[in-house]
Image (cartoon, rainbow, N blue to C red; front, side):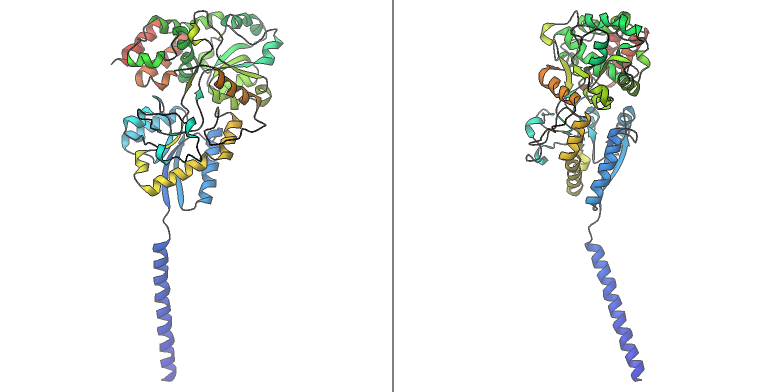
Length: 431
């Protein structure tokens, strides 16, 4: 009996201990913080710098913040814009995404009612608020830009290659024309452009040309507002620059077949004296070539106006921002903001500056590296010296902008005329 009683007591104690342990497990489980899942739309792919860096930064952030899960979808170029439209239409809104404040990068989010003002949540000791431009009618900040203004119209000039043919960096369009015979004799293009990318004709070329020809740095925004028409002589004349450059041999007749990668490759491999692209392309140029590359405004045109001479088109830099969907839950909002701040860290911003992805940082008291590549120093100098003008797709969106981009490709291939393209853009804009 005594043994049985002892066994019974032990059994009871073990049962009680088991019950207490189980209760403790339940209590502990209830107290453990649940992971905050933040849905994001990232810009890049597995083969480019933006995509590779995004994956690396997310992995690092999640290791340091195990209670936060960045659940992202990453796409690049037109695939990104198409998916943004599809997800917003389906109501599948990410908590934060890569976007901007203009017609191309911001309009879909604005139309979906998903723009969120970050101003009150941005740490002024971390971000230099004086470098972040207002984006809404009341000074709202819809996204945190990766850097200061984004120059979209740059003429990259391989100075060493130009000099090897007996020329200097071009100051006028006539200087470019003079280079044609010598360049052709060497099997070189004078200017390469990714003409297979419709957006490049608009953002990286025509945005500057229309300002030069019209003399109005805000011609595009005024045209969209109705002050001007795209059928006005100034715009038709600006479009006529494309066939003139082809006729003069300044642009190759094969330009319309060249995509973004091939454009940078041709310049890096010294198959062209000059390249047209935005400031961000600087980081993709072969370092040895980049060291001898000038970044310039497009040379003076025969019919340009003095008021916009030497100007470049520039827009507010895109970046990452929270949506209204992401702002609804304070935990999600704060987790997203924490990641964005991590993404914009001094080290990562320095890397973007060194790589040429941004013109200049928006961080407070940022120290520019002493070993900043020469081409990036030249980029900063261009941004500081050149007058800025409208970027077309910052104001012209939808079918009208699509028609303009495709229309310029048609002009380059001889399938349409400047007047026909201008008429189509105007018609679609006023619908």
